[in-house]
Image (cartoon, rainbow, N blue to C red; front, side, top):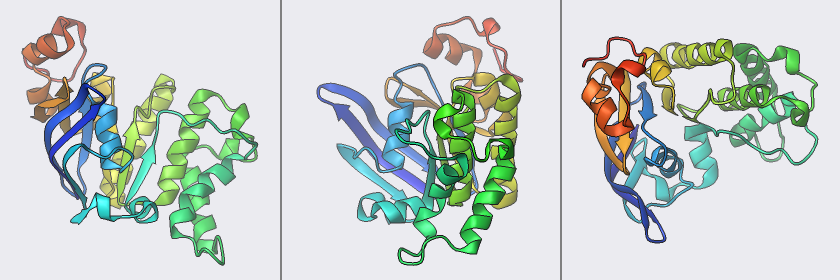
Length: 249
């Protein structure tokens, strides 16, 4: 579904990604983990076409990402950023409805199927109680859940999330992770998420990709990727301080 070959990204003189080779199959659930500045968010922006690599290639569904326009990318990839500033008054259901724009007829606008998809996304994410509210009046956590609903309404085969639980309390963190698992298992959605919480990543994602210094230094099941030695080397902490399911020493 997603293939990166020898991808490199540099901002001025600072190399952010270097020689990244990564393949993600359709229907996989993958978490990108690593310390701050490792290149995780930049890698997501490369996959979504927001950052053009200085070297290397990116393909989505067998097509070069650089050959696709934004509408074509949006039909393939839905994105949940860390946060979005909404500069004007808009209701929750209107913001979620933006997820249907890649599918709408430009002349006829939203169809009954689009409105049904929005209603289903709102129900699935559990934000029905927010319908009618101005997005600008929501808490950061409520706004984050609204962005997740927007992506669900988009119904793209690939879902990309950058720290989807960052503003959520514990209950909603777990509920969001369970939703991603449900979308992955029951809808076949390919899920790729950046997560700082290693416990959530290890518990809910079968495959972890560990980045450090702009390179992939681990790729596989959490038990292999988050070994005690790797936690020491990459995160610089005693692994006994990190609670993970079945981490090897």
